[in-house]
Every structure is written in structure tokens, then in C-alpha cells.
Length: 62
Image (cartoon, rainbow, N blue to C red; front, side, top):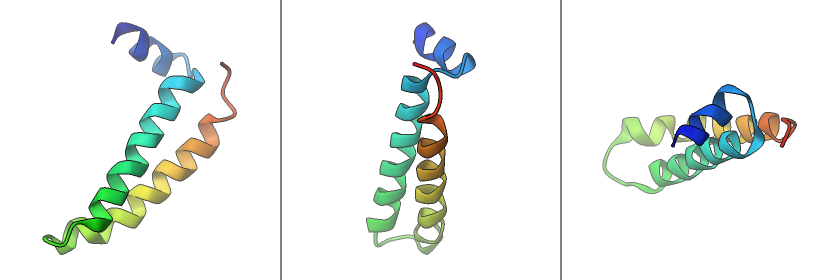
């Protein structure tokens, strides 16, 4: 956990890609749930944020 936080602070690729992947997966789960319209409404924003974040962090150093 300490290494993960250290990687986030130093802008290393692996931890940021993991966060972006979790955001994308969360957005897809939000999109597929049929119960709450508010969660469904924000799902596209979460997917888009995760995708843009993944594109940006793919240019970070290893």
C-alpha cells in the first residue's frame, strides 16, 4: 500500500493506470444497474473521466 501511494505521488504509470481502470469498471457497473437514475446519469461521466485519465497516465514514466 505504501508503494502504491508513493507511485501515485511520483506520477508513475502503474498506480495511475490502476486507478483509471477502476474508474472505468465502476462507470460500467453504474451504467448497468437498473435501480437509481442518478447513478445511471453520472455513469458516462465516470467512464469518460477514467478513459481520459488512462490516456494521460499512459504517457507517465514507468
